[in-house]
Image 1 (cartoon, chains in turn brown, purple):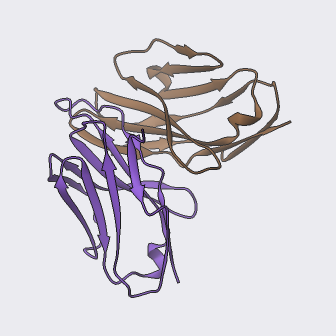
Image 2 (cartoon, each protein chain N blue to C red):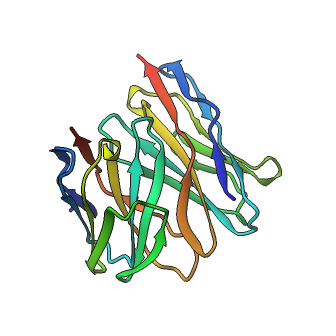
Length: 114
Length: 115
């Protein structure tokens, strides 16, 4: 069975602070895929990143960075110099080879205080 | 151009009615999905279709019937609506890559309210 845990239900930080959103996953599959999605207050789901289990390189995209560690089954997401527009619910998700179903975590609501 | 579109965006209806939500994608993807997001924001897959064929059916009540007239469309029909069906329904699509899970792109969601 697959499971994604986002232990942080809500986080609030002051603008320009850095913030890390945690994601811990469970799977018995050796080939799997991890995702982050953003859901802003307008409600749509915006794709941020996809990672496969064989690629443990960290990724940076502008102010966003992701740290994938198989040893701790974690795929954490850091926003550097946060902005008000980063306020949203962020979801981590998992799937495995041969099954495209996404198993989502419960989401972390991030509020950036101006 | 909208990649994955859904209509309507809002749907308010009485208990017991039958309603449909339409989804279209212009990405040329082979696989389409329906997800349900409940009031606590929890997202769960309902169905997946690949080239008009049902692939995933996650123990959804048979009052829910997906219909895929072609690979660019996946509609969701709901019979005898119940209060518990109130949720946001998301359609998504992805490329079929031989078992590799490609990125799923989501539509804007349809907020269904059953009174």
